[in-house]
Structures are given as structure tokens and as C-alpha cells.
Length: 117
Image 1 (cartoon, rainbow, N blue to C red):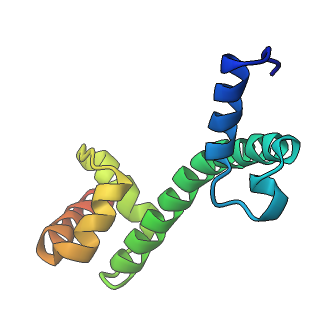
Image 2: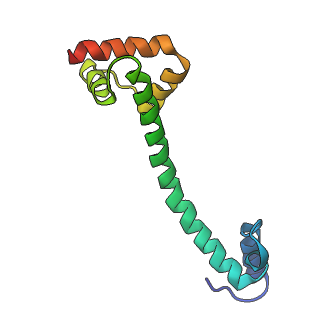
Image 3: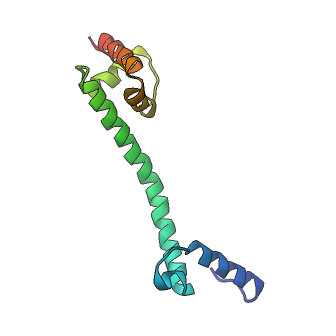
């Protein structure tokens, strides 16, 4: 992005240098390298915001699967049973219940078992 000299340019440079704070060596001092580094960092940040959502969903599924395995049912049958019972709880909340509230989770497992049988 090109800006003309004086106030606007200095403001733009300062903003870019602030965004490169914490980078190592010339990546935080030399403006051309700063521009490249900040642009690349933004690309990674955008990509990884999406990746983080994917990783958390995978984590929740793993936790639910481990919790239901101890109760004598597998993950797919558990989720199918909940769907048939009309229980609309997302995987994040199910994982939290599995970790924090054993009694409530056991009730959901029993409900899912009844609907799949």
C-alpha cells in the first residue's frame, strides 16, 4: 500500500512497526521486511483461526468418545441416540458435561441407549 510523504506515511509506518512488535531482528526494524512479515503473519492468523475451530471440535469428540466408552456404548451410537431422542446439545457442552457433571452425562447416555435399542 502506497501513501504519500509526511503525516500519513509516518502514521502508516508507525502502525506497521507496532504490528511487528516482538518479531526478531530486522523483521521488526526494517520497514520492507516488516511489511512482508506482517502480511505473512496475518495470513497465518487467518488460516489458524479456522484451524483452531477444527481442532477444538476434534478434542470435544475425543473427550465424548472416551467418556461414553466407559459406559458401554460407542460415540456414533451415542450421538445417533441423542438425535433420535431430540436432544440438541452441541459437542462442546457434551464434552463439558462428560468432564464436570458425571451424573447428568450418565442420564444422557442412558437416554441414548434406550433410543438406539
